[in-house]
Length: 316
Ligand SMILES: [Zn+2]
Image (cartoon, rainbow, N blue to C red; front, side, top):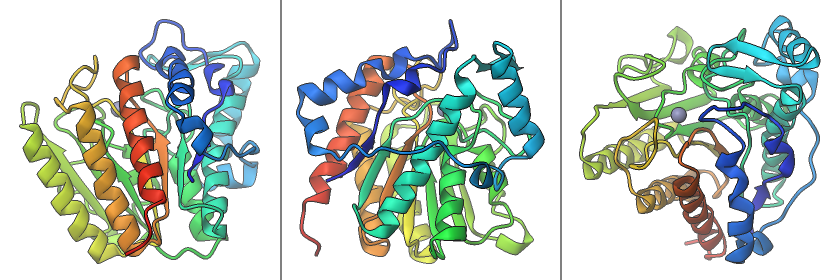
């Protein structure tokens, strides 16, 4: 089985005429029902993230600022990062479901989880949201694993077309959480050069793979696979997260690195391979970007399909 977190609550983060809008994920549930995948997944109930867990990544001042902005009817963190009246509560639920998936996987309830959350998280840093992101869902979840559940080594694989600057910054000095990001370069948010490998206490635990516009997709896939295999062998993660953005798809209006829908199956397989090899198969995939609703729905269908298919295959 696979844990699937996909809930109408994530539609309530209202952003208006914005690429990161509810419409992105509206078509996913009908598709997963139509193809039978919804019925093959476990649908857990979960709680909003606690203040204690949230403050491991974000400052109290910033958290209160988002809450106050939502309560007063909404506003903007910056020109592209929107807070609607429901956004604070929705963002707590988004981070909460990554925490819940983490607890369930470490407890042994399941091997895979897919969290189809909004707002996304990987750009959010300690003291501010940016790039459509409010709270860093994947970072909050990874810290539950290492601070509370006895996991000693985590790997976060970020294939969103944008560099996961917030995730990298959170773990810059933390060896316990390795980070691999493949992203378009140069591009927003202008971090993620290959010489960024971690702070003094964590040198070599961050791996950035910048890809220039126009790079053939075969080359992109080769770079991803070979570096992931090597890096995972070095890191030996006990738990793997994916910051799963689908904005490198060729139809995406923002990203555009020319990947096909099938290529996201290849990326998924590569991560499942290293999870099977080192992490008892444990993978938690968390939605980040992806701005062509139909292409993204196709990609999510394929991504979840691989997780389901591989989850029932016997080990070895
Ligand atoms: Zn992105």
